[in-house]
Every structure is written in structure tokens, then in C-alpha cells.
Length: 171
Image (cartoon, rainbow, N blue to C red; front, top):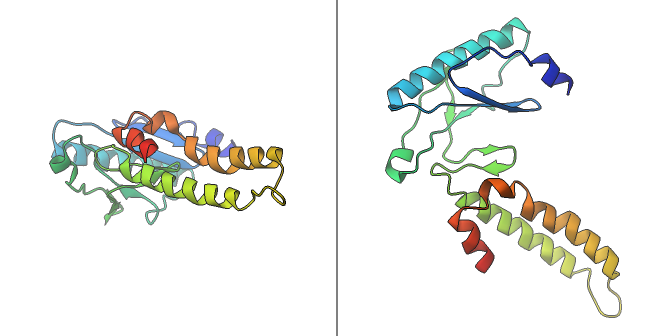
């Protein structure tokens, strides 16, 4: 909360800014890749200058660039975004606030990761069951809600309309 108060006056940029705690994402849509790179580089310069003024430092090692496009061919392009003359790492599917964002925003990779996580947690809960020695129904219900449902439903409004979500539920 204190960090949010500290950076409440982020400078105006062409890019949209999305922040949660100390995670900040900037996103920009432009008609050409060149104009997008120019806009992002300009905005990164503005943000870095702001951070320096407040004695903060951008972690270039944790910062990434990614391009999104509904066309698979166009989504393969790599942006060149620089901070202090260092190119940001380009990632095919960066994770932001726990959601894997693939280049076509299909959420396929994210859903595969969620499915694996849920499957392993269900297996763990199954080990707690048994007719003569297993955990009580209440304990199993609470464990399922805490371990399985939390993982399965995390950020569901973001990815639930993906065709891959419907495919994962059938498997």
C-alpha cells in the first residue's frame, strides 16, 4: 500500500499503465511495429527518469518485452525496447501477476500449467482419503477449496473465454 502511495503520480505516457503493488506493465497498441517500438522506448525513458527522480531503480533483469497479436505470424515479431541502452529480454509468454500471457492471448500455455498444478493437488488430496483411515469429509472439503479451487479459479475471468479452457475441462 505504501508503495502505491509512493508512485501514485506516475508521469503521463502514451502507453497505458497497469500496476499492482510494485509490478508495473505498460501496454501500447499502434498501427505499425516501428511506431510501437518508438512509443514504448519513449515511455520507458519517461518512466526511468521518474523512477530516478524518486531514487527508485527499474530492475532491467526482471523486465521483459513481449508483442501480442491475434495473427500467429505477426505475433512472432520481437520488439526492441531499450532501457539505458540495454535491450529488454523478449519473452514469448511472460507471466504477469500469475497469468501466462502467450503471444496470441489464447492462454493455452497458462491453462496447461494450471491443469498440471490442479492435477498434482488432486493427487495429494486423494492420498488423504480412505474408508477406514482417511481424513474427515470436512477436512477434505477445506483442503480441496484451499488447494484445488484456489489454483483452478485464479484469474478465471481473464482466461475463461479461451477455447483452450473448454478443451481443458473436457480432458
